[in-house]
Length: 196
Image 1 (cartoon, rainbow, N blue to C red):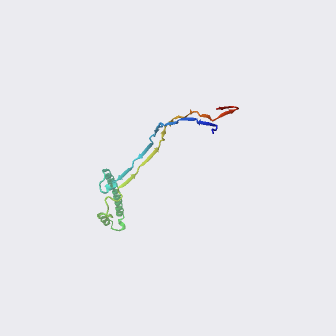
Image 2: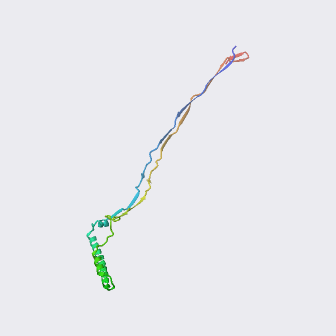
Image 3: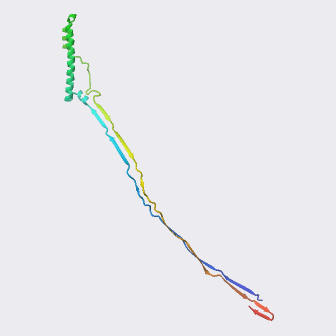
């Protein structure tokens, strides 16, 4: 028996999508560097050290005196000898003036003037200790230092940015389709039959 049938055949629609990816380009140029470092200011004041060695007395102890020193020593010694001789003659004169008081003044003066002097000196060092005089001035150093600031004129350079946007193209590649078929479909009327 043939049953009537309706046959449906469909074809779905098809979509085509094309994409173009986006691009990001970044170019960063180097910064314009301009850095200067001025020299620091420095001032140095210096008073040199000084060493003074005076060996005049040491040379005098060894009898290596200058002519001026010898003249000074001789004049001083002559003056001292003159004063001591004057005092001795005055004392001798006073003793002779008082001869009537007793005593043997002439014999005592003769004995005193004939004897050599007694020296207390026994051992000595040539040159004597402390005869070389040393003076030392260490000097002085003054340092003034003034640092200078860095001069920075560096300029920042902005990056170059290029952006290409992404693009999406959507199109209909194939339309949807629906096919309808009728099989064994009949129209039956009064004394009438038709196949559709």
